[in-house]
Image 1 (tube, rainbow, N blue to C red):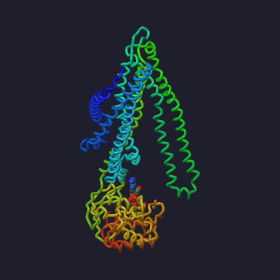
Image 2 (image 1 turned 60 degrees about the horizontal axis):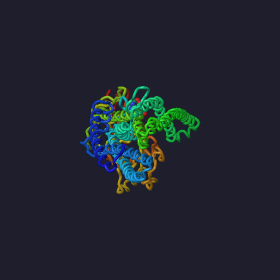
Image 3 (image 1 turned 90 degrees about the vertical axis):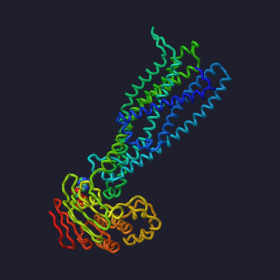
Image 4 (image 1 turned 120 degrees about the horizontal axis):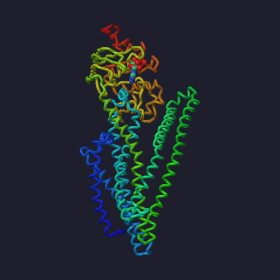
Length: 605
Ligand SMILES: Nc1ncnc2c1ncn2[C@@H]1O[C@H](COP(=O)(O)OP(=O)(O)OP(=O)(O)O)[C@@H](O)[C@H]1O
């Protein structure tokens, strides 16, 4: 087969236009069918629909269409190269210098286009994937934050595991998987059609015994590849499980290492290195024995594949040899046969190797849609109804239960005015922290109505101190942001809580929760209150790591510096009573007692 290179550009453009139309139309039809009728299709749409839909923007769809056209263009380039080889080798065979130099010129043009196409394709694929990844990460992160799903998700019947992995790893594999599977399948299909046609043209009937097989080459390559694929598939199947195990065992080992780093001080105090080392090395040994299994399986699998591809080098030559030596075809035809044979083999192999990729892709789809569903369910969990109301705390008919249905509080009613303070007391496990969770709107097993200042006008200091990542300035202002003008107020707050030695280190980013003692972190939380000046503060044993003197000083500071602020404290020490106007005692079975300045005002059983 010869190629008219003067016509090549025009022919290729025609081919590209036709192939693009057919491909785009069939892709669109296949996508609609997949989304409607398959589980993975509808999962895909649940995750990516609002990004790809033209209602959001035409941009992603247009870029993706361009990527498809580029994939077709790449197939067309391969076809041109295969004809170029044909002409080139035939020129060599005929010792035709003129054609030889002419074809080298053609090659320079083809190679330039090929390089430019490859670079542009790489850039466009990356840009498309990056934008998609940004959008999806943004969506999942927002979704996870909204309605406190990141916290309330734990109360679902089936909480999702490893949200970190889903947001980071799975988003990435979803995007790269979607792009490479679709583009790969389209290229493989189009390539299969184009090169089967070339082989068809180069192929002659073959006489086997007394039967003549027409177009023998085409049938030979299909039978060869299908048999080889089937055997490779059987040999390679255990690799899926071994690779999966490898990831899991690596993660286990890394988790044990990270945990040792996290709890370094505890382990060092206990002198627990021997037992920790055993755990670490035990996990590592499990990992290594799996790595050996991978190596031995790889020897069989790669050995077979290598042998198959070596045979594939000579197989087409053997089939074409009789016709070449009889002069029926030229050297170029033989070379083109071998190349087309390789292309058909690669295209068919794509579908085999994609079997694993697709299985992993579906697992990714499951994890992402599971995450989206869990977030939605977490938004929908009940919470006490809350009305934002400045300068007051009003609790009406509040019920608080444990997840197992055990009642922690029955029909609680109380109200506080500016400047008043409530101390909640009760035995450990009686539900003090849980009551604060219900007031914050976090606890799903509660009913009733709460009126309180909303937004940043209410500040909850949880039992375990929390410092965000970043510098000290961020930690004090949290959850508000601090600007350069706030410097004097930040410093003043630090001095007030006896942390004057930190005023010069406001801008130092450090892992402050490791450096500061628990007592210092609790004092920093008081500085946070002084800086943010909320209308109401909830303090859950916020002075537990301090001595009585310091506790007294900090509570006095709060009462004096922010006289109108309402306080709701949980604490065990008797001395705290002096700073509170009301006291709520939680008792067994949900009963409680409210006293105002040492006189009983209401009692409930
Ligand atoms: N997420 C949860 N799932 C199941 N049970 C929980 C959960 N959180 C709390 N509980 C249970 O609810 C009860 C009340 O817990 P809570 O932390 O409110 O007690 P507390 O009065 O603050 O105790 P302490 O004084 O020891 O801090 C406990 O029995 C606890 O085990």
